Length: 344
Image 1 (cartoon, rainbow, N blue to C red):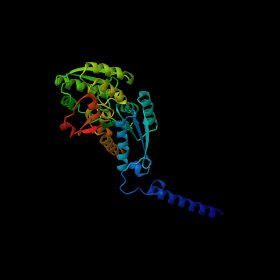
Image 2: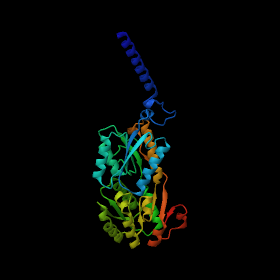
Image 3: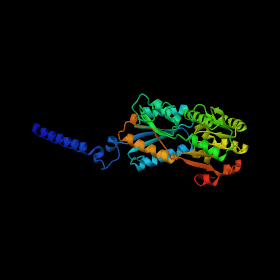
Image 4: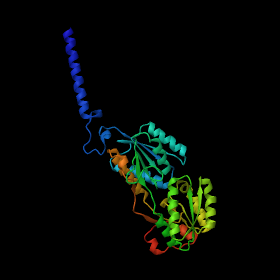
């Protein structure tokens, strides 16, 4: 009887060893990785990468970035629900929300946090500061001034990304072409957005070089925007506002002030022109989202974030709102219109 039991036990153990060898050769679920898998070691083992996306607020430019990012990731072989799982959250203009969401992403041990807009990137970088979780930002105008990276060429920490830096000099030059009688320009921005402060500093310097006087009004919340805009319109020949998240969220209000007072409002983003601003020289936000996706792919495949240079775009597009031009009484030369994106 003992011999029979011993024989049975030996057979069972042999089967167990064979099963173990089979699983270790084929990976999870007993299937081999597909040839040409785009993923790094984790997805080659059929684990889903956990990605947290935090967006500052609901705004057309930021939405375009996110949609282009997710779509291009899928084209690159990283499809939501397949080999990655995307957890998208919106901070709704609230820094407390942003901080809470990013801290949750860290506690969930995400494989990557993607932050869209400077305030979201600042929250993500702070939450992941003492971890090795990579943070990839998009639409951060000046990541050095925001203290997200040590330099654009070599970030030096677990944070890198794409910048939506705009050509301030080209926007002011466009303003002088479209409205050459400008003697004073009003600068409208949020005092609590590092991205805006950086651009406003550039605008002051370049306006001075062009002999344009500057008057400015900083706001702390959107409730102050209308009064600030009206004050600037009474003092200045034109208004300029950068890619400012608070101003962009109330762009319709600013545009109405401009139209009511016949004051041209030059802006930092094409979406702000779509919302009634007069004109800009800006970037393509779909392209920015796609470039961010390409950087995410590099991170998934093992690239060192601290050595990944911040990416910027160099192709700019003039965008003009023809309806706004008519309402403020400005005739746009055909030579400019034929090379511009015109919205109604």
